[in-house]
Length: 252
Image (cartoon, rainbow, N blue to C red):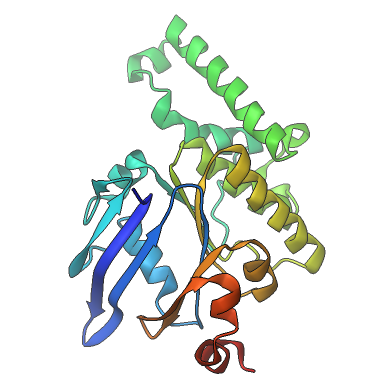
């Protein structure tokens, strides 16, 4: 059974078909890429997968569960987490507290427990601190646990955003242009991080990316979008050497 199975997905804004009959099947543990020029509909598809938009037509199955049209929180609970092209951290919180924000759904206590600092409050907070620190160690951010997120270098902010997403314990991780704004050294380090996340967490990853070096270096299969339509799908090397893809997207 595929981890993500999408069929006949459609959405229009006014008279514009932003996504038209989109389909994809991604197996568990796969590192999959979604590419295309600006305006092709890539982020719209992420928004459909995460419940930001509701599709006009189509079906989305996550690990066999129908999540079509569900609310964002319900979809997150079902097992989808995402990062954004423009980093969206809690700037005024520490690195540690950013990760703990992702852990709260799985570590709850009542309002009264929090207000009166009952024993369960301290027990739960201690458990979350430990779990968050373990995640930060994975990303080599544990030494900056008490640093404000806004004070981290750009590359480490990207890592923190991925760590926070993983704190929600997803089955499928969506990365929206994770290499945006990075220099070549940061991009190379990010490639290693994404591979590590897939292997260490047994994670299925779908990423949007314009950096073809990153795409060709880590993605096993690709879907290419052209104005909301699927242009090509298949093994990364085959897709990137397809004449239509080269003509439409790579400018060669």
